[in-house]
Image 1: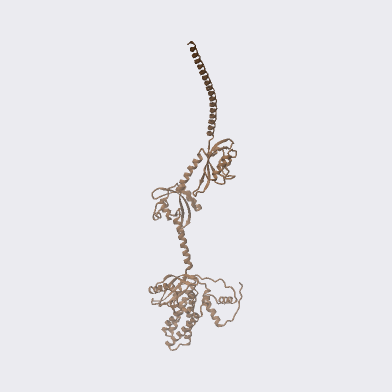
Image 2 (image 1 turned 135 degrees about the horizontal axis):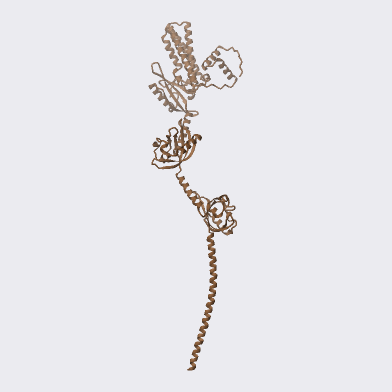
Length: 597
């Protein structure tokens, strides 16, 4: 922004006020005037500069040195007047203005420089007027003390004393402005528990004017007992031990319950007695909330860590020592947690080849993570097959390996059983075909698996069948009646047993015995159909040959029976004729004998 030089004639009192504000804020008088003009004409304020703790402490140290120099000057002036009690009397008056310079070193907040003047302007009129009256009383006490001791004070000495008093009062006012500019509540207790000083933040916290608080106890101000009683108890301890103490208290405000960290420090006199206790309170509500959130988060993560199904190890990469492990890790390896945390990875690893160890290390260094199968050794010497997923992370300022270890024993056993079952399926002479469970209507369920026996039986390769419908085997078969009966049973989720004529890939016909059973999952849901196809062509041929032979035998038997029946009839006729002949012969013989007689 462009600037121009302008000259103004200002009243003496306004010039004096500008000078005071410039000294209080550490800026030049031009900056103070520009700021006042901006506020008057409604210009936006510049971004306030926030002083660091070191800058604020440096300014306070400089102010302390100035007070020390002024006190020495006051002592020399009183010596000229032979008034030895004037210095102590002035010091007692200054103690009423500000309890102790040493209390300034207790503030920990970062204070904006501009706050020195703006906070002072915001003080209540009672506190400001009390400082003016106090300054006038101080000047009068100094002049009165000098007059009592010397009988009469010369005009130059009187002016010098008044100037020194004004400077000391100004420094005391600056100290008060600094403390009032502090956003943390600061107050001073005397031995009987009265407030001898409160800054603006304390007055705002209590909802009172500063003039309403000074000289009163917390009981007189009706401060909640649960808030002030712990501080009051610690105040008595500080008076007794002369040591600072820290305590946390909660105080009800219009914004709810707020947590404060209160630091109580003794103000020690030259005779090593505690004259007062200064208390600095810092609002730590947000900090406590963050800490509580962190504790909850840590507890949640610890719960996940401890009760995870996998074993979890944290391994120091530089020493290979186990830094931490969860309950499953110690339980599955047979160690107590204390024993496990005293071991190295070499104590629980099953040895592997140098080449494989080098490969694992290289991948960890390259990608920062790795998943591999391994074996660990239990405390009793037995081994457990595991899958390890490791990742490099930073843990307590060191590089570690965070390893999730999963017991694969059951999985290996299941895989072995599945391998054996698949091998049996694959090597079986019967054809095995697995399809989806739906749809049963056209176009039908898709094939998801066929074994080697199916290929040998039908001539179809797996890629020619998988994903297609199983009716490819029956499209030319004369099995409409049987297929309809099979569909009805499948709709009822019943097992099927039937004999059908199917056709191979080359078109040749073969007989198949078809057995279909439903497959269900662990929840009882039907997921697939498994069909076992057995080639029964040879059996059918034998049955057909036997039937033909049986038919031929029947024909032969019928023919033989016909001939036999004819022979029997002829024999019967012959036998009847013979019988008839014998009868005639017998009659003939019988008639001849009768004639002879």
